[in-house]
Amino acid sequence: MVNKLPRVAYFCMEYGLDSNFKIYSGGLGILAGDIIKAAKDMDMPMVGIGIRWRQGYVDQYIDKNGYPYDTYHVYEYDFLEDTKIKIPVEIRDRTVWCKVWKVDKFGNVPLYLLDTYLPENSDWYITGQLYGWFSEERIAQELVLGVGGIRALRELGIDIDVYHFNDSHPLFAGIELIREKMDEGLDFESAWKEVKENIIFTTHTPVPAGNEIHSHKLLQYMGAYLNLSQEQMIALGGDPFNMTVAGLRISRIANGVAQLHKETACNMWKDVKEKAPIIGITNGVHVKTWQDVRIREAYEKNEDLLEVHQNLKMNLIKFVKKRTSVKLDPDKLLIGFSRRAAPYKRSDLLFYDEERVRPYLESGSIQIIFAGKAHPNDYTGKGIIANIVKMSKRYPNSIVFLENYDMEIGAMLTKGCDIWLNNPRRPMEASGTSGMKAAMNGVLNCSILDGWWPEACEHGVNGWQFGDGFESEDEKEVDEHDAEALYKVLFEEVLPTYYENKDKWREMMKNSISSTMYKFSAERMLKEYYDLMYTKK
Ligand SMILES: *Cc1c(COP(=O)(O)O)cnc(C)c1O
Image (cartoon, rainbow, N blue to C red; front, top):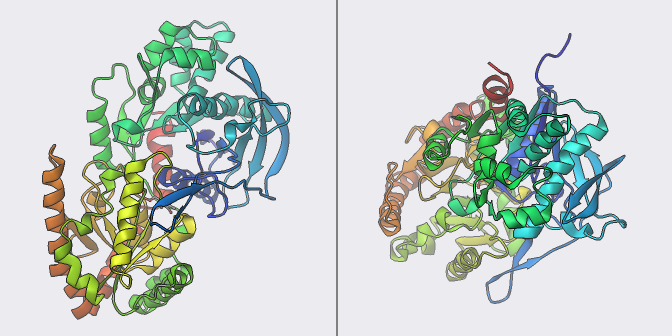
């Protein structure tokens, strides 16, 4: 049978395929990894394009004063397949050669990774640290990913119908596609119009600072204009050049990563003229990667979920003991919270009014494990982590901070905790996928109605919400409101259910799994990508 599905090249700065394959940082990469695994399961004609990061994202530990510090390692892998292909990209008027590696050993469709660590390059360090640098070096990395990615596909002889840019980092791939058409003799407007038909764009963060902006002077100096003029580049990304705006203008259709996020994104970019329509395709996770097989089996055979969960909780408790020497109590409620330490995620909301939680933390009837990294240059984020570490010293038997958050910790926590806590300042969380992993393992979400959760939450049935979707410009007002709501749901609903009504807890676990296992799977997400975006109507 002829496969008539469009052939897709998926571009992303990072991929989370395996905990020890350090070419990811967080949510964006996990999403990309899950997508290329789902594409393999579903036999979809897709390839991934990314970067072979030598040092990956930062490794972050806590020093003896309780403050985070950063380290970097060079990671070598024996499973990268050498395609023997090398392609040139002009950066700062110098030729940078990019070697192309292939990876397909994680149950994924082929992933091609660009690598500048070659003796012939003076700028060999470009593919060193993921999100390690800003400005010039970030643009250099994005030129490798975008321009290098298109040239690699050409050299590999892979025909592509649809180019999907996951967030704006791959944007220069679009400029390269326009350049190709202009080289064939088309004028700029016609070239833009033609390539637009084949480009799909996914926008992510609603945090303004998360959307990259560059000056034209710098772009020109870096060689990011390719053969376009300043006027043409301004037509795409404005002045200064906004990568997300350009993404929205260079694509046929774009998506937000949850239904609420679609509204937020439409609102955020409403003044951008001539942009692609933004639809909502809610993220999903690769079930085989994130759902424990024992829970899956118990669910399918209608066995006691709590009994199986208790084993997974014990695994986690042993893991914590080994890493921190803290011994948590398996019979007491265990909350998980792992997030990048960004202020809007409010990692320490639980401590908003410490007096209120103190008795529970002292008695151990609430235990909580935190994990998460701050970006190396984010001192506010590092301060948040230091504060959590301080709390863990104040309540050493009930609060744990796990260092160097990675996929392994992510999986352990979303399988072994009882409650998954999520309290961003709405509507700043675009989607959030850790809550989906938790839900599929019968770990009950207790979350603000942000990101994906409004689509899934049946309060008191498959988890809990708090805050009732409250929003305000006044951050202090929201924090106070949400902290109050968190205490109320925790003390009056979660704790009584856990300690006094295990049958209801079992029932909720079952509802949590049944309401999320398909609806928030990467498979459902990928079907929607094909139906609503890749295939032209
Ligand atoms: C799932 C996962 C994420 C994304 O989770 P969020 O809900 O977006 O915070 C980030 N990092 C790791 C290691 C993960 O496993």
